[in-house]
Length: 475
Ligand code: ADP
Image 1 (tube, helix red, strand yellow):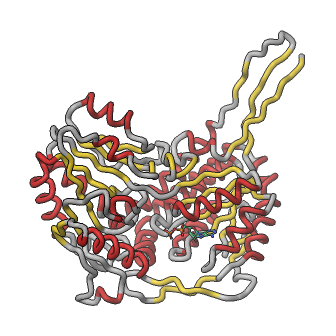
Image 2 (cartoon, protein in one colour):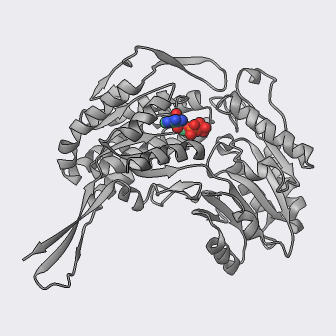
Image 3 (tube, protein in one colour):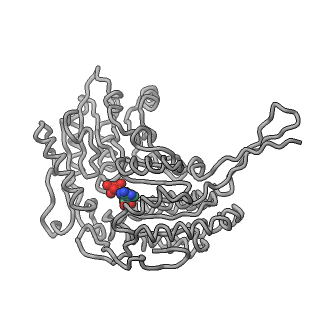
């Protein structure tokens, strides 16, 4: 753990194991932090806040820029570590590391653009000036599916704004978090400004984060259930929150779109990170006219995806995070089969060629998915493309919006008016139009409805770490 500029053991001096989800092998022993460590980390962040927030934006920017250059220099090494600890194929891990570095660069730049405002007063003898001030100590909780970029997406804007941070990474990916903190330390982040509390049991730490009055903000990425619980507790204590939670993305292909082209996009975005992404398409609504072409192309592409250890050449799809994740996918697929879905490929665990040692499920395409199936409602977080037919007269927008989630959505059409109306009609906050990657460090990312509160990335991302102070001057 990293507290007040020192790498140290947990107060309990206990450990847990970080292991490789492709092989089941242990990688390293990690300090198992608890409430006492979380409090020590908050002590350090609280003490470091006045000096850090008092530094000029240019000084903070320079440190973030240095961290960006270090991360880019070490991209290959970080990607290998990520593949080993998290499982995604090396190329995907390299892309994620670049995405993580992008946040450091973006907020190195945004640090210098925290503008206040002057506002005319109704009184001739008064002037209003709006100052921006950092919120204070930030507590961050991050997930395992994007174990480097989800850290920089929070750390970079917090540091740029002048906040200090205590971060608890996911129990499955602590080594990735340690690597990020080493880079920030080397870049010159002063002692106490960033603190890392690794833990096997997140609950006592969540309790400290949401109740300690020195923590002014909680930023969380993870499941909707945990996010709601943390948001509730944080709300009781009037802490600011940013919550980036689950999704259930629709992927709409209208009859005027090329179904083969759409299927190519669907195969690329669905199986990224083995479907373990909150913006992964969970329901593919295909107009019946292009159904055969869409399902045919999708299936032939998915059949060619080779599963295995992401460090091996030619592996296109890695393992799931743990056994529980495989069991959830299995339950959804079995339920869909029982209710009439057709399995076009996959549909089972992968046990041959040593894959039984990891958490592998075959890349799967299900056709004829209907609203009564679990997969139509529950987030899958696994490698299953669920294709839902629609026909003329069906209100596909209403079908797409029929979910409690509101994160990402995708639409394929060559009709500009239809594209515009669909974007306006979708209750989702990130929409790809003939595009499978509508994300960037430069653009806001976040959800509507049960997918969360607040935005990360873009110029909006830094606002989450700033207070507005109104000063009325009598002159
Ligand atoms: P998933 O089910 O995808 O692992 P979680 O929401 O459980 O998603 O995990 C996301 C992050 O939330 C992880 O860092 C995890 O340790 C953390 N977490 C889970 N439960 C709690 C809790 N009770 N308090 C604080 N953090 C928690």
